[in-house]
Length: 315
Image (cartoon, rainbow, N blue to C red; front, side, top):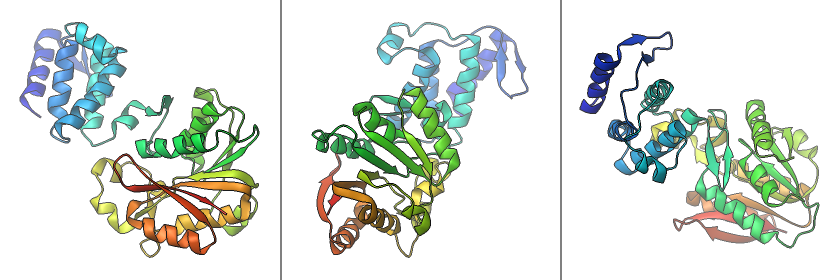
């Protein structure tokens, strides 16, 4: 650990008189850190794993959770002391973060648009690029009738399905996933965000299970698209913690899940319907060619970084 951490440990032991608890956290009788000191210590320690910008961003999320205050208020109250409980949580959060565990899993929370979602290692952490996909769908379907049906394939945390339902309460939204654990989290997030969505356990690789799905107006999906051979090149916090089922596609057919979603679209999209898909920019050409060969017309959109990231497919 660095000098700041050693300093904090020494101060805690000298001033507070500490005892080691069963959970291996240090229980201090008196608070020994101010808000400013805790934030500085967190950033300086996290720069061992992340660049300074990311370390600062992670620290801000942790400090907001610990204090219940936004950054502007934390600056005004920077000399305020930590309570015993805050110090214990601080030490727990820091120890978890130093294992490369993503801050969203450590805190059990991720934001998707303006909405908060519970997340853990059973579901992917929502990405900003996926927000762009959902915003496109919302804008594109603004004139569609009440009762329009939407199927979210690979719903995970339920962030896509819940976001759509929050924006269009009159839509009928269904989320599919192969993981029962993921569906439990999606259900929890539906309740937390006060939405009514249907959730279905389904392995879309199974033709029989696909055939049993109900026809819908809209399909949306962010399917697995990282070839398994690229796993070693991913950041450790992604590779070691996010669910493999939601990340990886077979090396021999990286666009397999796009083909499966396309087959579902052919079978289950109602007249005038469309599929909105997040795509891997490295395989955008192959995906587009496959869909065009199947008779789809396509619209392609780039993400905020300028990469080919989203398609709308319709027949």
